Image 1 (cartoon, chains in turn blue, orange):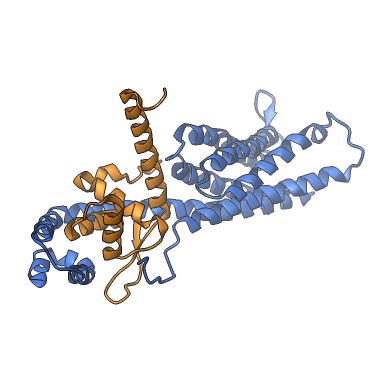
Image 2: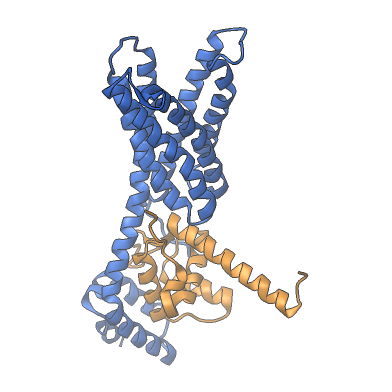
Length: 262
Length: 110
């Protein structure tokens, strides 16, 4: 009887679920209700088989988006900080490797922002997308500024503003905006609250360091600014890396074989 | 750019069994028979084997649950991170719906 019922299902369904389904049917005597239920399920499996393939592909695409965003956050966080540190240490007039690494890192962070926002927006869509806009605009502007500096370092591009102006305004917007993104990420709690906290710390350091950085406030001990800059780089980079690791871990395939819950 | 999320209500007449399965898997991986007995213990209503596997196949195809390696022909299933998020959203929606319903009935203060 069980074998006969199983034969009613389409072959691909039997190949995937047949053995375990047969084991389930052996667990207890089959009543008329169960037989009717299995007949309906077999009918449904024939009707639904095509739809399942499409849905499976959709789910794989969704998981892939999250993994790519996680990878982009890790690589972007590292490249961004390394590039900015190298560019700051470089005293030569030309555009060095550091700036290009910084541009690549920022572009990767933009990819990560889009992917992670898409994942997190399922719970608080308005909050997440609002928090996405500021760092995304900052990222685009700072990349544009870096490219302007590479093409014509000394020229004024738009009404008195040159590449450096765009670069620094975009950079500040990116870091402060990442702090807003961190707040939204903390609220959703979907990826990593540690990563969110680190991004928040980076934004806070920048806000505190900005007045002395632009010479608006005197600081008693000059090295303090360098320490703040290093702490900002580290917390911003680590924040994105931790967020990226959290995103990848969210859908890591199970490698532990369990014996079942009952 | 936002990928549309898989939703439990999209599972048609299997939405309710799917929700019961997801809730059953919240305390750890379970194989088919364990899910059936757990759901029956929780709701007082039996879930047929055909209904169970039709819903399991849909949930797995949508990435809400994940099959683990079989143990003695019985394959345990676990909730994925996406499944956990979708279940949380769905339960919150149901909770809000229930609260409004109770308010209309005058069984809960407004």
